[in-house]
Amino acid sequence: MLDDLMLSPDVSFYIGALVQWGFLMAFLYSFVSSINTPYKKRVWLSLVMTVSYLSSLFIDTSAMLYLDFFYFDIATIFALVILNLFIKERLISVYLLAGLSVNAILFLGMHLDTVVYKNYEPWLFTVLYSWLVNFNDFAMVAVFFIKKDFLGLVKLKNAVLNRKTPVAR
Image (tube, rainbow, N blue to C red; front, side):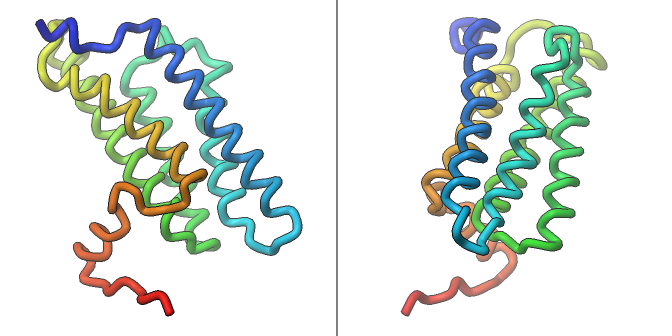
C-alpha cells in the first residue's frame, strides 16, 4: 500500500533535473532583472543555490548515500548563513534555510533508517521523505519568482522570535 504513495526513482530523477533547471533560471532571472540596480541580494542567493544543486551533475548520485546529501545541504546552509551576514535578505533566505534544514533532517533520517537500522521496507517516514524533499525544492525555486511569503514562513519566524512585522504605508 505504501509503495503506491512513493515516488519512483525515474520520476525523482526528472524532478531533480527540473529543480536544477529552476535554480539556474532563478539565477539568470535575478541576474538580468538586477543589471541596472544596486540590489543584488537575489543574485547572490540564487548563485549559491545554483552552484549547490548543479554540482550534483558531476557526481554519480545513484552511488551517493543519504549522508552525502545531508553534508551537501549542511554546506549550502553554512554558505547561506555566511552570505546572510553581508546581504541581510529576509524573505528568500528564510525559505532557503527552512527548506534546506528540513531536507537535511530528512536525509539524516533516511540515513539512520536505511544504513543504521537497515530498514528497507517503505513506511510513513519514507513516504513523507519522498514528497517533502521535492516539495521543499519546488518551494525554494518558487520563492525567487513569486517574491511573496506564500507559505507564511516569515510570519511564523517573526511570531516565534516575537517580532512585529513592518506595516506598509
